[in-house]
Image (cartoon, rainbow, N blue to C red; front, side, top):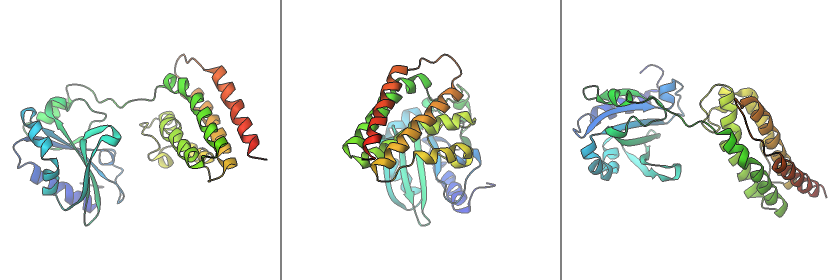
Length: 267
């Protein structure tokens, strides 16, 4: 496993050996930074575990038990908070290692966002399942964003005006993760995964995005929100590949309101 840190490689070797003993399982594949060959000591492991369709219900009920066979589990929980209840998010240790175990029925394995590297499989069946359809990572919908962005700007300005600065700071993080980061990564030809690895994949835009970081201060939050709006305008123009219905009136009104709130922070 060239380029894989030894703690990760050791876990993978042991995991494949143990999971292959369970006749209900069909294959194991690794995605994320393992697939992109960007693993380092801080990386987690993203594993897909394919299950015989008729055994999926029983395996789903034993996910924690299966995870405990792979090493000392310090904590584990399912991924409803990220919209993926099939994932069991585990912290192993020592040494500490974050591992996401996504249990999928072989019949559903073709529905995926990337083509994970198959580490082990029975009779080529997992590879065959992946071949049934191409991987599809959800791309940012620029019209969807434009329809909402200026409402969001107004919302953020109201939080600043009311003095809810924790809310305002969190909201700026929302804009970076949901809008600015994905559009920046898309512009640089990278997968639009929020702000992940933005500093490495789009360093120029990451440097520009620093202006959207705010201190716990109303003036700082207002300036950061204005910077976020300006960066969005530039990204919107650079990324648009077809017709885009601009919400010009909403933009004008929201920015005028932000200017009014921003002026109050100077008093």
